[in-house]
Image (tube, rainbow, N blue to C red; front, side, top):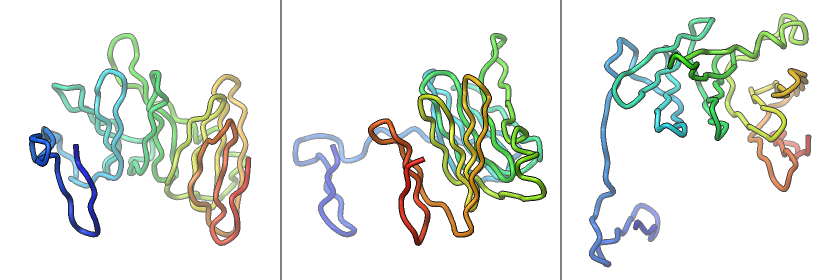
Amino acid sequence: VLFWIGAGSLASGLVYGLPTQPPIVQFSPDTDTYPQNFAIETDLKSRVYLGSVDGLLVFDGKLWHTIAMPNQDMVRWLRFDGVDRVYVGGYDNFGYVEVDPAGQYQYRELSHHFTSALGTDLFADVWDILVAPDAVFFVALNHVFRYEIQTGHTDLWRHQGKFGPIALFAGKVYLQFRDDAVRVL
């Protein structure tokens, strides 16, 4: 049990006779990748997913797997859906990873569904992902992509300013328009 006491000070459960440090297991990828990671997520089988400069790294408890993005670029954000998919937001690319029946990791790109709507626009980094009951939202600075899970229907919103965080509250999706307001989608 850890307690926050004030700016820069941390008191532990030592007062109650508990250890002063939580149990920590340190592990490092044994892959030939640059050691800079941006996001971390786990799934129901305790696999660890890292968003990395070199794509997606997955640790299954024994082995590390590297999944390169179709554009060979970085992964900035990850979000587990609570069932079987880890949604991936990268640089000008997004989609999801799932494990097939043979135990192989399969990346399914979703950003290609927005090619005609985007035209020549690039959206750069996906900074946030929200998994709602009926759709997944991928938030970049000036673009929000909505992908309906069951139907494949897509929506794209643009903003001259910048988008901020996205959240699901009481069945409604809220999105911050920086320097403006929070709106319900």
